[in-house]
Amino acid sequence: IQKGVKLTVPEGYTAKQIAVRVEAAGIAPYDEFMGYVEEPTDEMKAILPFAISGTLEGYLFPDTYELVEEMGAEAAVTAMLENFTEKAGSEIASDLRVDMTPEQVVILASIVEKETLLTSELPIVAGVFLNRLKIRMALQSCSTVQYVLPQQKPVLSKEDTLIDSPYNTYQ
Image (cartoon, rainbow, N blue to C red; front, side, top):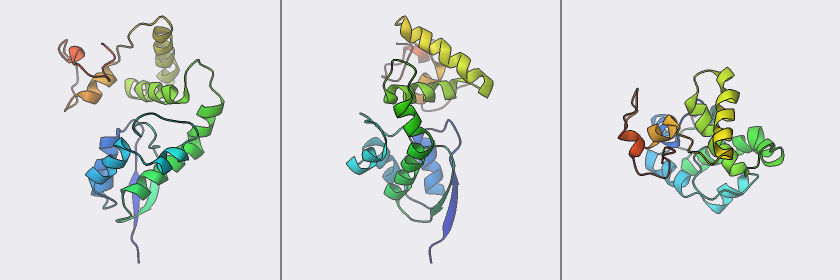
C-alpha cells in the first residue's frame, strides 16, 4: 500500500525551496530532485510545449499535488511539468503578445512574481520590465539578486547588486 502525500508548492517558490518540501514530505531526496531540475531528461523536456535551453526552474507549477511517498524525484518533477503544460504552457506557447520566446516569457514572469506583493501590481511591474527590455536597459530586479544570495535580505546593499552572476539583472 502506497501512502498518499499532499505537497503544496506556493507561487514564487524556487526549485530549491520546492526540493526542501519534496524531501520533507518523504517523496524524494533533495539532491535527487535538484539533479533532475538542473539536468532534466529529454523526456522531461518533451513534456513542455516549447523548447527550453536550461534548467526546469520556473516550470515546476505552483499547486497542491496529491503524490505518493517515496515516489521518486523523476515522477514528482514529471507531475509538476505536466501540470505546467496543462495549466499554462500551451497558452504561453501559442498566445504570445510580446516579441519574446516562450522561455523568455516564463523567465520574466518568474521575476515579476517575485518582485511584487500584490496581484494587482503584476501588470504594472511587467510593463516596467518590458519597457526596460525595449530600450535595452538593465532590469535591475532585486528578486534576481536575492535568488543568488545564500540568505534572503530585507534590503540589498550596493555590494549585493555588484555580485557577478548571470542571474544578477543589475549587471
